[in-house]
Image (cartoon, rainbow, N blue to C red; front, side):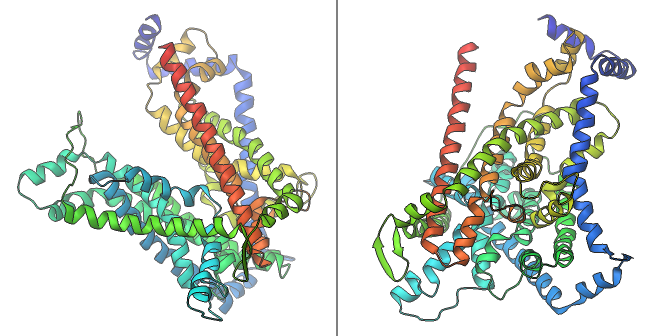
Length: 569
């Protein structure tokens, strides 16, 4: 009770007194200043400096500033073709993914449709699996030896590679992003507004057209922008199935690994950076400031889910069709892992798994080890930075916030190339080591934890933590005993996201792997390029099983902690 009284008294302290208290606190805690400086140095070295190196090699030649080479590259036919292809693919994938995501979200939040939990679960598969699983499945089904094209119809010489396949694959891969985003938006809209329109005699269609859809516009645009970013950044799917349809991400990789032209690859990567960063900041700062408020007081809990069959059944059929397609594609990969030679000898066998565990087991252990190391570092660093940004006053706080989000907003191809350039010489010689991969995974995935942590702390009255300081606790004790428990949901979300992305990452990591430290996703890609599709499928199955087992373990931990908390209360 005393702590609440102290918190109430602290609310009456003037801002100048609060600032004085914070300055005194910083003087008493030099370690806090050291921590802030350490984080600034880390962000500069591992977030800002690599991006600077990419710009430096792009703009500077052997004799200084060389804009002529940049202009020549950006005006070349190969670059213009790759740029146009990437933009075209991004726009189409954003539109198709957002439409499917909206239908899924609307059916899940507004109707009495059966099987919503099942549809939601299956929609999560593309998020927790390697980025090119569906691309591999499309080859197994519709390739030259595909079950559908060759096995059922006997079509020989079919070409599954190109834009059409990429659109289908990216739509199914990225629509869950739009679905989750739009589901949250639709759930936040007070249904009393829609119910009022119905009570006034409006039809379901008119309510949707004049109420629901306009209120969901921020989520729709946000989904379009997010999927557009993911699409133009995508490396795995175009690498596997684009064929002659060149994209910037793949061209950047080929320039570096195929032509040994690091500068040319950096130029291609920079070309992805500008539309990606522009779109990211539009999504983050412009749309987030738009107000579409429907809840102004205590929200109404009355719900009137749509029960009309002429609405529910078409939505059910649509969701069932998309879910069925996902199950077919993932089922094909699972089946392909147990087939001797796909399309030639369909005898069931465990040879693919024997090959993986005998000749490729190192990549499995490497992926697990590096992910397990980077995951807790990523999550805790995200929580610490979130705490500093929301609860502490110091010079350069805005810079810390922006630079900590940089590696998330920047395409993975740019990050990978930047790390090669930044850490390829002494005293920062990290190329070929496990450390560079761990650092890249940490700073690439950390922004999600920061976002979750800051959102959690914004919902908590700072007087609670300030009361702790008044009672004599230092910032470490306050963070450990008060702030971190309040951020527990964000912490576990960060752990889950970090582990999943660490296990399935490809675009940045492919530039950093070495003979001693190869990872599963890179190995899968090399197996596909070598036409060992059964082995690639076996790797994908193992990877999915590992990720799902880890998610189950983390969920079990959350449930047990929740049960302990309920018993303690």
